[in-house]
Length: 103
Image 1: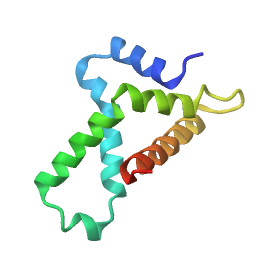
Image 2: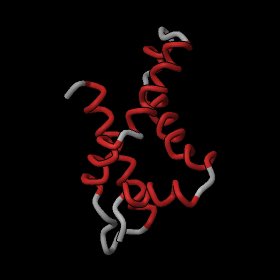
Image 3: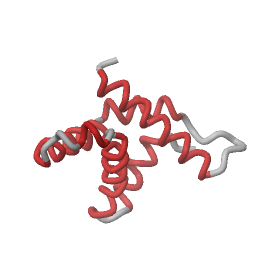
Image 4: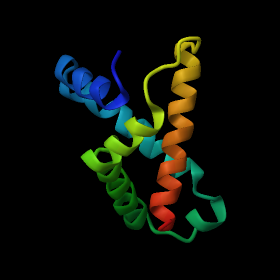
């Protein structure tokens, strides 16, 4: 059974380039949605773009993927794919919050 990082690396080999970035794009969109409206209204578009690029770089770094993969582990025996994906997303959000807040 693959861990998350192994799965991601395998999918990058099997999928054409545009599809490779879909996961990281979805992550960036999710992070953008986490930003409160009051804060985002005071941030310029160039700052938002810079932040998005930095988050994209972070979530695709080997260090972050290793941490995420270790935290997620492999799918649990009784866990459905939807449950695994939900758990992985929540874990990723938690790691991003910790990393971006400096904790």
